Length: 169
Picture 1 (cartoon, helix red, strand yellow):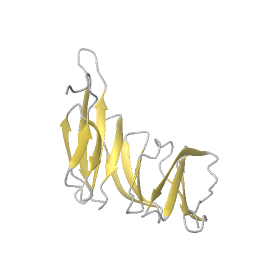
Picture 2 (tube, one colour):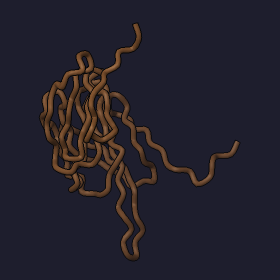
Picture 3 (cartoon, one colour):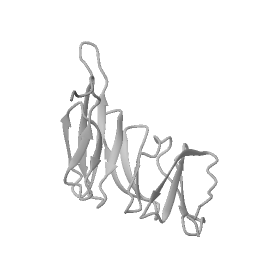
């Protein structure tokens, strides 16, 4: 046999769908906040639930855990258990816009980048935050580095910055 294919209707759902829960679940989200979770073994709908109205696109999934990270239009990050349709964690980020969240494989931390737009007489800033889900503590640093990725245990972060000039030999 070949590779099994799960054919799911995504009409009205954003084109980004993702596998989570060690590949057992396929998650798709509509602009209305409707999340549809499919069982990849059967192709059947396993769960439907709503996140906040008008969420940003699904931002990140955890390949091991059945969790997804979404953002609301009022700059709140949410961690949902996709298999149960339950909001597990919520953080008012306090900075907008934010993007590129990374959920550690053990589910202990979420890293995300943020940008504070320039205001009159002040230049914009970018930085990274790490949200500890056990304590709800958030630590951050102002830096040009973006696109954080957490190690499986959430203890280390890798990030990169756009280069003005490629490095020389």
